[in-house]
View 1 (spheres, rainbow, N blue to C red):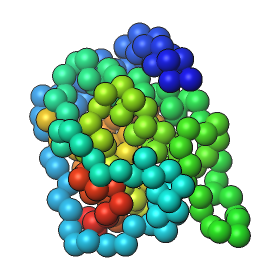
View 2 (cartoon, rainbow, N blue to C red):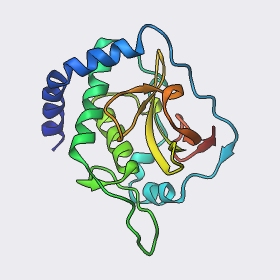
View 3 (cartoon, rainbow, N blue to C red):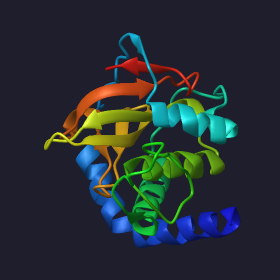
View 4 (tube, helix red, strand yellow):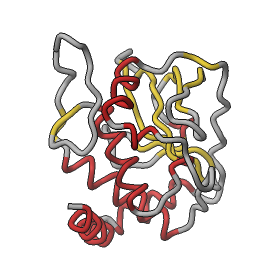
Length: 191
């Protein structure tokens, strides 16, 4: 499955080249700035359950804490973002006896499934897990939302299932609540 995904990502990279060029232009040469984590806080309970179910996804991180953002890495980032956004069918949180359930690599899901799948796919492509953090926020309309935040040499960038456009964290409509630690995905901090 991963070979198919990686092969599909390469095809998607070629198809998305025009939008990626536009994204690179929108990012310009400036930096987006970095998120400053606040105080330690509780992880979302659904994330705690996720780590118990998929302990490998929550292992202490290795590698660099930031990715050098060039045209090649931006294309790869945009490819994974667009591919996952198009492959997962969006559905609202299902009401279950245990509440929200976070999963990875599924055919349908809500914002957490998008973010977790993007993280997994980027790690499979060789991206350092320390640079890939899940963040929880509120949308402009007040809904709870989760996204993948990628720490790059040009600042923290957001991969959101609501758009294929990759944006600096300061240029979204999100009101930030908490974010994973880059060093240990089981630890979370206020923003």
